[in-house]
Image 1: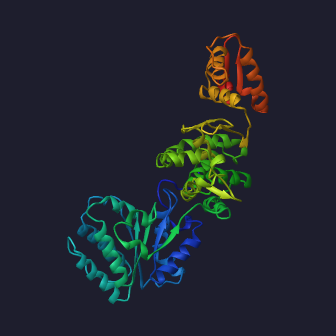
Image 2: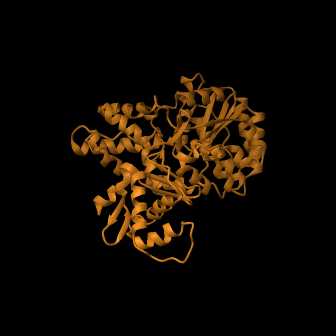
Image 3: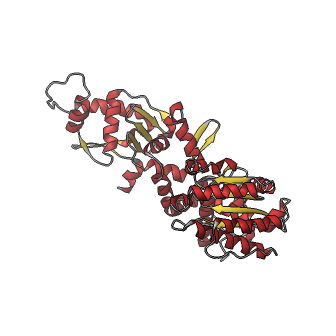
Length: 450
């Protein structure tokens, strides 16, 4: 069995498996050569750490016109530093700087423990005196914001050093620097912002086909297309889909077919669901509504800010002026979530607050009475509702005459159900009659499984 070339347990460390960030790599290294600091912003799992690892490689810097003998690029991860005091932070950073310098043949004074800001400045002065250009790559930078011992003093110190010496920074964070440093320091003012997003349509196939070629194997063009659709241009999810596609192909001991994709989709769904849950949990209630009601909300200007935020989080993609979910797997996840004032069931999307219905993405025009009937049944999906309950709680409750209720038979319910089924067209079978009992909203898949 061949070795699986796809990665999704951590960042890409082998440059031969680093794909589709050529433009960002070139731009960052050109800016570092001019002493410009860069803020890389992108959501979780979009590849920020892999990008920093890549630009930290001396051979990559050399390919982009930087002299490895003069350019010192040092990676530093800010995770797990929530309890450090400032001097300990300076010490850890300088240990990385002196270690990297030694690997490139430069001798710097080893820092004493703990080191003060003046000691930190002294070693950076040595790099300046030796005509070294230092770039500090600070990964997970926003985690430092959780440390009450750092804050404004650290940011002011770093900003001063960038001005004083030939030092630049590349920070990686999920939010823009201004979002969590603005009230502490003008630190963010020295940065060029770079947003890291999904792979473009032309770049995504390279990850799948290039990885497979490394192990002397290949997927058919139809399978590659299916993998790209499930992965949605997201570097992490493309890796996950590619990994399990190859595992399934190996299990079959033959080429994967499009007909196998229902198995692949279910396998991948089990792997990515926790990541989707993380994204969902970190949205506020309005963002959840805008995301779940996307066919409605993308047409309304008042939701422009939320739509742009969701696009920046790589959860939706804009194409030809229309937004869509980045992956059908994520779309299916969103459709299963409970959202206030929304009902989602199969091809139906109901906006309860404004009495709007979409069926397979197209507007469905229902009277108020039929809307109430459909929403009542969907809210009780899979449950049999008696004709008397529908007549009392839906049809009589929405009638103009509000006299004392009396059940006079199911004719009024039968008439309303006929009207609703006619309006639903090909989806009329979702309204199932249970003879002698009542009616039930039931999707075809539920009927088969039942």
